[in-house]
Length: 152
Image (cartoon, rainbow, N blue to C red; front, side, top):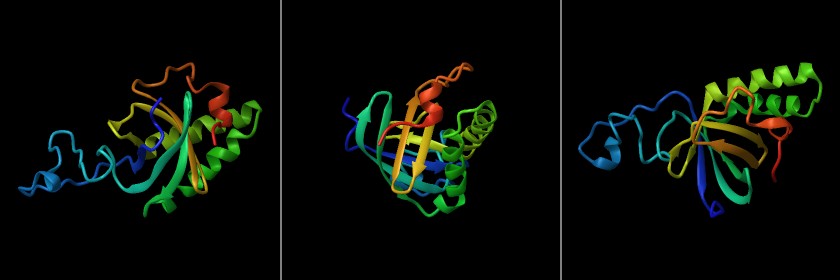
């Protein structure tokens, strides 16, 4: 599918302040708040980068390189994976709440820009995710496989 070798970015949900200098590289896109120097824009603090090395549709996975803001969300991702491994209704409910917190806290940015919906797992130096250009439906497009994780 051609994803191998791409770098995807995980950024904080809060937008970054974009410079207003005359240099287009430092100016960014004033209307969208995108800063082309930071992973195609669309996010705040640098949580990390994912260098894709495996594409197993619908999952992409790769090496995760933590950014300076990863420590602030590391426990959130650890909790999400722990809950994903449970298979009873109580775990599922808590996993969904934790996943919603991740979606409010971070943005996943492809080489083409921010994606509309994603399911992202991070453990150590690996990350795996699925994504969509459109929001997932209420039925939970992530399905059972999404809750339990997949990929490398």
